[in-house]
Length: 135
Image (cartoon, rainbow, N blue to C red; front, side, top):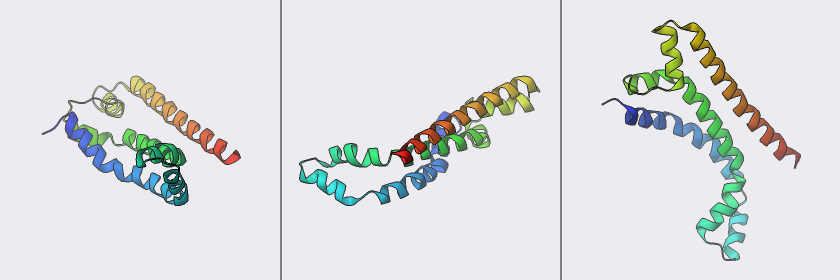
């Protein structure tokens, strides 16, 4: 069956490995003694995760989110085929404007909007990473 649920499952199946591959090296670099120290002062596993692991893995999470966002914007064929035309996302709409309605001006404007959004995400990531390296 096609529809939004199929699109979500398909996109998750394709994009989860990229998120994991972005986060895993960052988590592996975290010193295990930091979590042990949190346990020594009485922090439970959840509190230790929220106050130690999560803040230290923020860079990998941000990188993974941006990578997945960029790839999701480029995978309009997956969205088009699995969605069966019932789900409209910006990449699918751009494709339809170019191929079906031949409205190249509108498709170009939407493409530029998507490009600016992607560049803004990269600029935010660059700013956060450069701020972290300065500290």
